[in-house]
Image (spheres, one colour):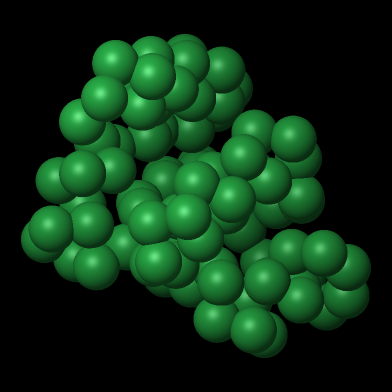
Length: 91
C-alpha cells in the first residue's frame, strides 16, 4: 500500500463519525468488499460515504455497509445499492 493510500485510509477512519471502517486491504482480500459499519437509524449519501464508494470502485469492489438502518427508497444511495456498488448487510 502506498503512503498516500495509507494516509487516505487513516483519514477515512477518523473522519466518519458514528461508524467503524476496517482496513480495506484486509476486507478486500477476505470478503471482496470494502467494509463499513454504521450503527445509525438513517443512511444517506454523505461526503465520507461518497469517498468510500469512490475508493471501492477504484479497487474494483463494492462497498459493503453493515447497518441497522432502513434501506433508502430513492436518491444517490438507493442508486448505488441498485447498481451493486453498495451492498447493505444487517448488523
